[in-house]
Structure formats: structure tokens, C-alpha cells
Image 1 (cartoon, helix red, strand yellow):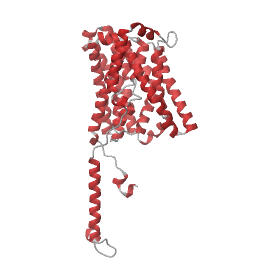
Image 2: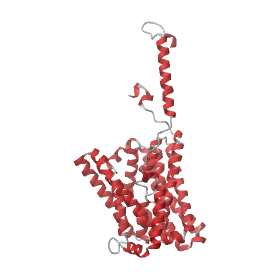
Image 3: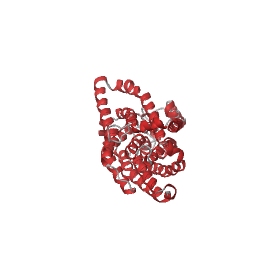
Length: 399
């Protein structure tokens, strides 16, 4: 073959072949050099970059408010969304201000495209709905009802079990997009994963929480109150977000919707989240200051559960040869929680100063630093997955 290539009519002259080889080698060397260059650092806004600091500041502000102005906090705690609903009105309003902009981003039409790459979605759904809440119930029962029971007592053991179950039964919706961005995740696929989780949450959240809390603790969950919570914190904002998205895209176009309308909510969402955290920590001021050792104990099963589910999802994705841009967000969705919803539901079911609410608040405290560590692990193990093939590397046949 090589001899024929250099002789005969129309054959490429040897100097030309050498130049071509040299050019190809230089191109390959350049491609390797470009691939070895460090990826540009991710640019997050100041709120996302220093989220751990903001959470810590909100905790300090909330605890100070609870200790210095107990009358104000008691008045805010007593406000309910309707007589007997047990839904705290200030928390409900702030949750809506956070969840509605999240739901505006959910594109349920994109769910139909899952058929083309189902493996990542199947792993995400398996971990989130068949493993995560049940493994958390097992860990909560083991640690709180047995290992930690001599230090916390029976009543608080039941409350803490309930709180961590509520936390695990609500898959993350908003912050997943930040974690996906930090790991170069596929944004369209991440959106599909979040959209499907939100749809399933409408149906499974209430029965799973009711079943597992009753089974792993001695507490009875009022199912009607749990349904009110689902309607208030999931159904209403999801419906409003979906209808608004469809109507605005049809009337103003997708470009206006994504570049002009959605950015308006960024400062609103940020302010609502910070205010929610301040209120949560104010409601829990006595628990945080009086039971700081309990906070450390509650963090133990939550940390185990986060790393277990992240590792399980990531390992299954690798085994199924799912691309890293899908595997990393899938692992992060399996690890993180919709803590805004969990806190609101715990407050609704058991009260703002309950042990269950405290357990969900501990989830807020550990969420950011733990998820950043999972992001770092995903980025360091990128080489475990097949490198994406670009059109330039694949040659003219791929173009």
C-alpha cells in the first residue's frame, strides 16, 4: 500500500506526502496541546460563588433575631395560610418566590426527547425514587432510633427520622443547574432530569413521606396536611410556571423569554432564599443554640446518604457508559435535595420549632460544601468516561 501510494500515474509526490504528514502531525500536536490546557474557570455570580458564606451569615442573623426579638418571631410563626392549614404564611410566600422562577425553566416538551438517550434518565429515576428515600429511612432509623438514641431521647429520635426522610424524598430542582454548570454538564439533559423529577414528585412525594415516616418512627403523618403541602409548594408554582412559560414563549418568543424575562427573577429568587434561611434559623434559634451537639449528630446520616447516592448514581452511569456530561449532573441530582420544599413541609407537618424542621435545616447547612466536594470529585474523574468526539477530531466524515 505505501509503495503504491508513492508511484504510478496521479500518485502524490513524496515531498507533498511528507508535508501533509507534517501538517497532520502538527495539527494532532496542536489538538493534544489544546486538550491539555486547563479548562477556563467557571464564572459564577457572587451569590453562587460564596453561597456557603451567605448560608452562614443567614444562620447568624436568624439565630440573633430569634434570641433578640422572640416576640416578632413568635408573631411570624403564628401566621398561617388559612385556618387549620398549618402552612406558615411568610414561609409559603417566600417559597413561591423561589419555586415559581425555578418552574419557569422546566420544559416538559423536552421530556419527549428522552427516548434517544434513556440510560441517564433511568439511573437518575432509580436512585432518586427507589433508593434515596428508602436508604435515608434506613440510615435515620439506624442512627437515631439506635446508635444516637441514648443522647437524643425517643421523642426527638422520631422527629429527626421524620425530618431526614422528608429531606431525602424531595429531589433537588434549582441548585442542580449550578452543580451541572460546575461539572460541564449537558444543560438540556439536566433540564429533562429535573422536569421528570418534578412530575414524579407530584404523585410520589406525599405517599412516600407518609409511608416511610410512619414505618421508621412512631409519628403519624396527617395525610391531608401533607397533600395541602404538595398542592401549596409543588402543584401551584409548577402549574403557574408551566402556563407562564408556554404563554410567554408563544407571544414574545423563546429568545425574549430566556434573555429578558427569566433574568428579572434572579435577584428576587436570591433575596427570597436568603430571607427564607433567616426565618428558618430564627424559628430554630433555641434548637440550634441549645442542641448544637444534635446538629452534629443529624449531619452524620445526611452526609452518608449524600455520598452513597452520588457514588451509586455515578457508578451506574459509568457502568452503562453514559457520557460524563450526563453522568455528573445525574450523580449531583441523586445527592442533593430540594431543601426549600423539605423545610416548608416539615414546618407544616410538625411545627417551626420541631425536631423534624431542625433536621431539614441541617440539610441546608451541609448542602453547599458537600455538593461542591461532589462536583470536585466528578471533575477529577472525568477521564473515567469516554472523551466526547468533536467534529474536528472526527475528520471530514463526521461533518
